Length: 343
Ligand SMILES: O=C(O)CCC(=O)C(=O)O
Ligand SMILES: [Fe+2]
Image (tube, protein in one colour):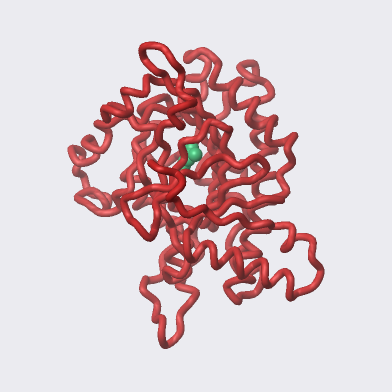
């Protein structure tokens, strides 16, 4: 892709929202964020409040985990089935799918349909962490002798990310013309999800030939997602003005990438966009040389903010000109529909 033809993704400085004491400046910052989420659905955020030291520690410990031998990692396995999304998933277990309709979307039994989704393997491994206060999704931790720093580091990073997420939810609410805590009030923080991702090096040809995907195009089902990525590159965001084409979300040091999830899109009556994204090969010049032209390994850390499961999500922006497009739904019902398609 010729990157010079790409429209840049917006960059929002959260400092204007977090440190200004006057209402007008904060409101303006919120409106800028909402406008970016309306136009593109993906933004870089700087001054997000997650310190450089906490972030590099999370990446270091994540790398240590994925460097462990498989038999050690398998001491914290993702439970079978789709109901609980915690613990370690080995390469190929998950097939990210954007299909929310189809024979099995209503919880039906078309196993063949789901099997088809798995035919292209996602070559990545992941570890999902939640809150210990989430009764529906008990955390899966390895025995403490496996990587003693794993649990304390990831539990702490989970809370750190929520602090950053709170400010973003407040800025969004203000920008939408709502009370500052309107969106945040739906999020106790117990239902968020921290995801550690590792995309191992693979021959570039394997992706080019369609045998493997790093992560195929999908939207997230969360309220919002915060994403920290290393310097490898490969994240791409669909160009909303040219569907089917993608813009590189090149890593920018000191920023996180924030995107609107499907739930917030629905909640905002489609005012905010949940934009499709994917992970492709890193740029050509960064691929390993040699016969197989292996890609670099890539590490990323998405954090999904999700509402408490039984609160009813009703369309927010509803006036005579914009009647609600969707029935109210609880996050629990929405997530069950999505998860069924993924595992
Ligand atoms: O690894 C990335 O950069 C993207 C991850 C992602 O989109 C997801 O986990 O939903
Ligand atoms: Fe995603």
